[in-house]
Length: 208
Image 1 (cartoon, rainbow, N blue to C red):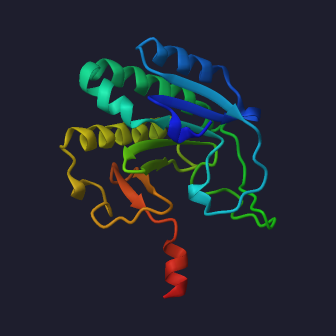
Image 2: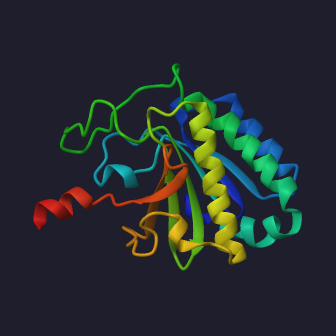
């Protein structure tokens, strides 16, 4: 399944990370009348690409149709169910019992012992014109901080779609340049706000 093709909400996961919470996620959101897809994919093996743009083991996808058709109609009811469902799915990947892992690239090079951002879980939202926004979650977050980040991300998407977004409220957003049609955001737990992450910052600096 291409995550970009999911009509409303989707969850894609690597087969070896299957969890009962994934089916629960699908059932809870389907009960709202949403078009939901929960699908597995084979272990991809080694990757070629920029680490933060690589799909995580579990990806929750939020389609534009979700915000266009449902958020405006059901508002708080849909929002609370989605927020609760995300919390249940993400809880497995943050905290003291969270899995640990590394990204292995095609040349056999390991980027880091413990990646800065989780390689196990992320959220990707479709925002139109081929652009996606991906929420990166720090590997050392506990479930509480992960939930804060997800809540902030949903708030960002809601304000984006209803036209109330203050561009200056997100550090770096005003001058952000998407990479591979993807804008990366992360949650600054000190500032309690989202900020843009440039996956090529180090490379640009090295080439300056």
